[in-house]
Image (cartoon, rainbow, N blue to C red):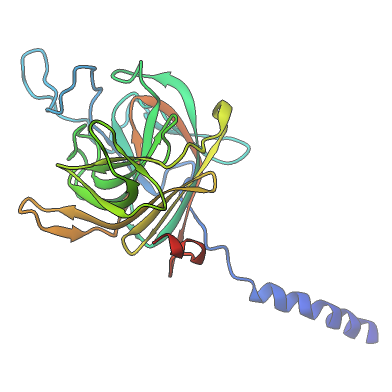
Length: 289
């Protein structure tokens, strides 16, 4: 009896510590069946694309492939010992987008390039991206492939850049543009607006991508209209005041939405996609705003 009591006394602290542990707040978004995602495919764009709806040989407008039609398996999942790996062929422009909308979160994923490239980017850098605060219908921007959103660019040598998608707008700490030169992000600079009709593209502060096409870890932190683009643990862009612009010029806050992964003429792989809700901006980043 004394021995049982002694075992209980020794074991009790461990049981208490176990019960006090917080559950893992990270929610995995990637599984074999892509059960938390939907698809949209638009067109196989050509090098002479000009932003208009593509036409067939008779001049008739071509309809996009549309939602949840993916006979060519642009989006597929590979079984890997490390877990499921998403393959995006890039053959057709479009997106994989979350079924749910998210607000105030920390998104984390790993990405690396494949080998295939397609027209109109055969002679250009490999390109993809994470589009966040995505709202409305797909196909409303220049390439007629994506939703109104903010873009965390994924491109060779440019991972962490920003693009306005459709009529989105945001403010970014950045050096001013000059002539044909784009703004460049920098934590020491004041915030400046990005929107259609002005600066709409911003270069990340520095290149922190891994060499030899190793897996890169990307993090996107969004909280109350503020966001951070983080590449391999380094903040490369500080953004705030996420919004969109109505036809009458009125600016409306845009702080939540779906998450899109682009298919953009280059083969790319994603793994370990997970998200964690936030109740506050992490303290180590507060001073950036």
